Each structure stands twice: as structure tokens, then as C-alpha cells.
Amino acid sequence: MITANSCIQPTHFRGVSFVANATSLTPLQWSADARRYASKKGMAKSAVLGGLMFLKNSSLALVFLSLAACGGGGDDSDDNPGPYKVTFSLDDSFQIPHGDDPIRIALVRLSDGLVVAEDFGTVSVTQNPSFSFTTTAIMERGSSYAVRYWIDSNIGGGTLGLCDSTDYDHQWSTEFYNVTNDKNITVGYQPWLVEYVCNTFP
Image 1 (tube, one colour):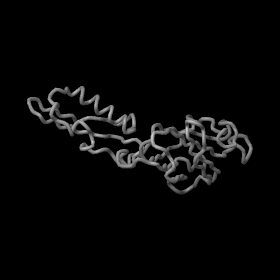
Image 2 (image 1 turned 90 degrees about the vertical axis):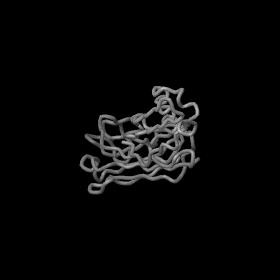
Image 3 (image 1 turned 180 degrees about the vertical axis):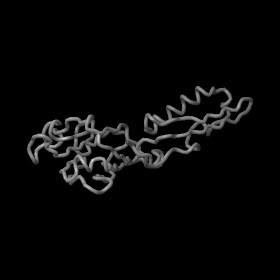
């Protein structure tokens, strides 16, 4: 899942800053504006925008944004123009199926497939997170990226040291689009979501 490092504050919402025409807006319009703002900020689709209070016959409108999830976390994009870093972690659910297995991981720019950062290691049997990957501030504002990772598990076959098919080597890809802040992502073990990424690790 994408962990929420920080949420936007109500004072950041543009609707609060110009209240002169607030009485002409309906709650539905405020809600639409809030959704557009969340989309612009790169918020997770699961973010819940609620708590709207509209005061009729008044020049004041108060908007409360209740954010159940903030995709990616990090600094507000208005304050941090980039570049940005990513921390990507495997939680402890990887320990039993993949403990002591070698892992390779890469950050890929989706526009051209360029590997901009990569690392390797071993999935831990005891630690949580069982593996973690942190880049320098390398992601460009507005660009889209994927973290691709391959565990050399050789389940029922395959070749040690080579990236085999998903039948033998578990591998995944996690994408994030239109980056406007640092990313802090933790994922759990989901073998039903494996995706072939061997072309990233020739």
C-alpha cells in the first residue's frame, strides 16, 4: 500500500482563499473542486474528501477536507519543486515465502524505459521491512515511474542468477504517475499480482 506521510491542510485548498463568491457555489461544486485539487496534488484515488460545511446567506464558506489516505506522502508540491526520492519497502509477509532469496530492484522512468536507479540484496527472514530500497532525489516533477523488482526464488525450477518466468521467479511492478512529491511505498506479498519484468534485468 502507499503510506501517507502527510496530508494537505485546509489552508492549502484554493476555495478557502477567495470567499467573496462562495455563496454562489453549491456543496456539489465544492466537492468537485476538492476532487480536482486532490487529483492535481497526486493524491491516492482512495482519498476520501468529506466534512464539507456550506453556510448560506453568508460571505464565508468553510471547507474541511478529511483525508483518509494521501498517496505517496512527502512535501507539498507547491513547496518542493523536485527532484524527488522514493523509498520502497517489502513488509514482513515476504519473510516466509522468500526469506534468504536474492532480490534485484530498479526505478524505471516510464516515458522511455530508462533505469534511473537500481539495487540488489537479500530478503530478510527476520527484519521488518524484509527489504528496503531508497533512491537519491532523482525523480523529475511531472514524470511517471515504476519500481520493478525480481526475487530469484526458483520455485519448482528456473536458473539461479537468471530472471526466469513468473512461474519460477516472483516479480512485480508498482507504478506511480505525475510525480509531485517524495514517495514512501510499502507493499505486502501478493503472488497473484506477479508481472513479468525480466526485460528490466538483462
